Image 1 (spheres, one colour):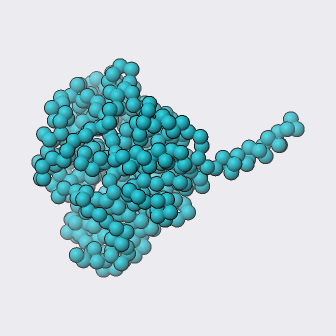
Image 2: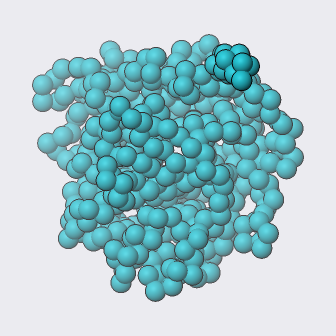
Image 3: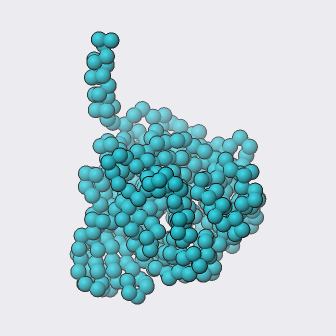
Length: 451
């Protein structure tokens, strides 16, 4: 027993001694694993196929990039089966808690058409190369809030913790720069909504080819969001410098108010403060399913499961669809959705004692091929299921990048829901644009608002 104090002293020093990249079997990348860390092989019964390089396809003709007929084999696929409230018990072990709750809430109208699983995820070669370097060097410190020696690629393709998986989602490849249009609909219980239209300029600073760790200066993303409508909000602008370590340095955010014609700091653009144009249906850290600091939660890596997830949503992206067609009372028009069986990482986040957040607990389901969060179960302070998130994504094939085309937050208490990332009635996202850091300066903020 006398040895116990000595052993305790050694144990207390372990975090300091262990700081640095752990030993990882990096040679698995590109061998038994894809270059981004997913299992190459299919599953035992063949319902999940092997990864063979992802969905490669040339860019469709100008003006027709969002027409599903240009995306074979997706255009000709028919559902293998449809899950309904009547037969969901048959698939219960592959459904999230939130999906089951939606069947119970809307037994007559909610359904999930399930298609052949297609592993379209891929990224450019420079992302693969950077991911391999990160696998050898990257590590977390400062309670998992500081990312060290990682840049450009997936930081942890061989994850060993829940926080590493979430970092992979936050820094997955979505292109280098983009101007996109993001329409949000806060759909009331009767199906009515007023579109809230946003134009968003983004430089994925971390993912730019050739950027070094030193070049990052603790910035992962530059983000400039302009409200286009409704008219009473038009002209308001939000500028964000998304810091990588938000405990050491909080997210840098500024707001330009069109009514007051002035710029002010916006420290509340974080955590559980209400998201822009969401009618109170999402928090700031629910944008992109999850973003920002992870310090208010304890993150547990549960493991990997085969589950039925929203996927390959080319049909839902079609620009001939109107928002009235997509958004219906209670939930999306599920005839436009597509679900597939995929392997996902499951991560539980539990609120730490002594901290505050609207959500006591969240369970995340993260795609192994793209590191996109595809679904989230969200619990209130009574530990009751409150909200359900899903993200319907596509591969933007001419950019080798993953992109959301519709993301939902269903509020089970209020019978309302939010759908965001829509652009069916808006211009096509411009992925040829190259935004430099000066575009995201505070000096440019008011100029952007008045242009």
